[in-house]
Image (cartoon, rainbow, N blue to C red; front, side):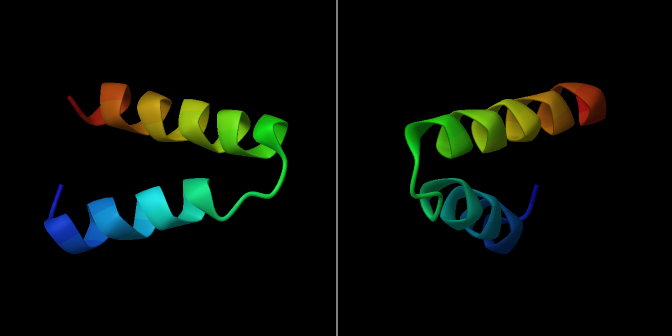
Length: 37
């Protein structure tokens, strides 16, 4: 994954205000990385 995409994903995860939102977004990120690998 290019660095720009990584940064965009991480920013998206960290922009969540609630811990539940951040956790859900992080799970989606990890699932996307697993599917691509």
